[in-house]
Amino acid sequence: DAKTTQPNSMESNEEEPVHLPCNHSTISGTDYIHWYRQLPSQGPEYVIHGLTSNVNNRMASLAIAEDRKSSTLILHRATLRDAAVYYCILGVYNQGGKLIFGQGTELSVKP
Amino acid sequence: GAVVSQHPSRVICKSGTSVKIECRSLDFQATTMFWYRQFPKQSLMLMATSNEGSKATYEQGVEKDKFLINHASLTLSTLTVTSAHPEDSSFYICSATPFGARNTEAFFGQGTRLTVV
Image 1: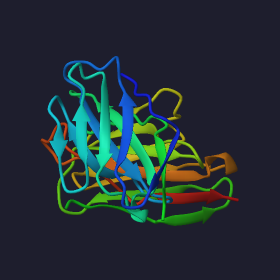
Image 2: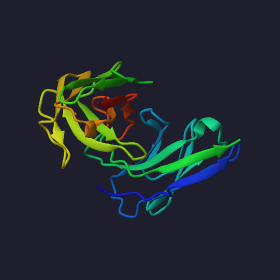
Image 3: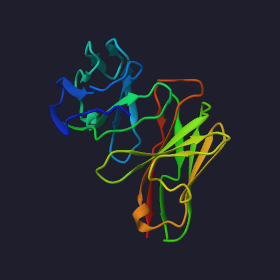
Image 4: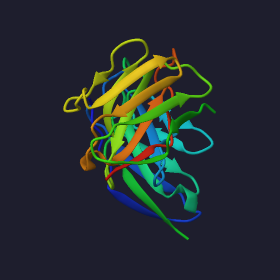
């Protein structure tokens, strides 16, 4: 399974944008890039996913590098409720739904 | 949005006993569900793939006789921790993806906190 590399932790101020990086240099052509987040003592929650083009939804934006070897999750205005562990995961095309979690980035948001 | 429900959310059991955890997809059918385990301050570790109507597929290092998985219907998978020991204490989480969907979002249950005393 292709692996991802993320910083262990990041800090942000409330109301400011946050850019969470992810490296996935061994990504294959059919791997989707998924982002999930997990609040303490809860199951993970879907944030966004994409293949090649940048993606936007109500929660965040996903910027994917042209060579697809890295991506960035963008939270446009961090709130205290965005404090969580964010996981960047490559979705294996022929194993729909099977997600291999890395260590993720623990995001803290300061008021 | 789609909902996956786990039951119970918390359970305490004595060493040597068995515990069953249920994972239900409430508003969609899922031929495949996944079970994860998470220790404190660690990431989720995939334990097994639960396949409706057939045997589960276990990840390397996961004992299939200890962690029994049954996927009897398109909306229910169960994980039974047999002969539980304190080292089995963990946060168990299931996920499911709607039948026929690929590379769409996975829906996770809220998790089950198992404490073995």
